[in-house]
Length: 225
Image 1 (cartoon, rainbow, N blue to C red):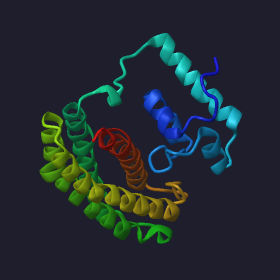
Image 2: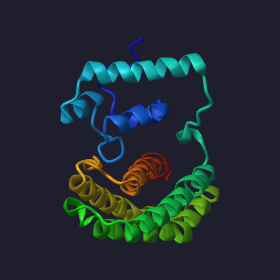
Image 3: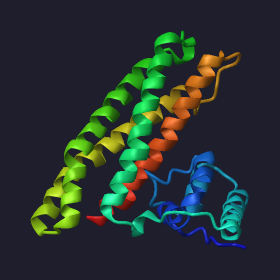
């Protein structure tokens, strides 16, 4: 069954069908930072095959309708529950995998073509860890307070503080783009060692989680304020 017109934005697609995220990641369709693009526009932007990609998406939606797995539609959940999820799932995962990537980078001799990867990652690591700290200590407690006491004064304070993480999300995107450009979208060099394969796998997992994490904040949590 055809569930898609091609005119829905990527953001709308992910919110309506959150289980399509893996497919969008596979095709590198940016639902986080280019969420206002329609599905058709985004596929044209990557020079993709619209029929093939839309068929895959429709199949995923059909499989979901048949199997009916449990899915949380976060836009319908309270602010506190969303924050709990972001902290317990995304923040915890990011901290753990950043430590793992750091250890790998300290032990691997990188090929010449990606010799600057360590420096780029350190820049990303610093940005992300400072970002998580600010959210956990300042932003999230304030959003929780606002969810219980929705005054105009608290709302304005939330909006002001939210400007910083929005900007930091864009900065993280820029560093991820630099890493992808350097590594040819994390394509492994010939004769890569097991350690380098593991490094690329973890970088890919970090990127995917970062996109979902930022989508949860920009497109769902922040829009509730």
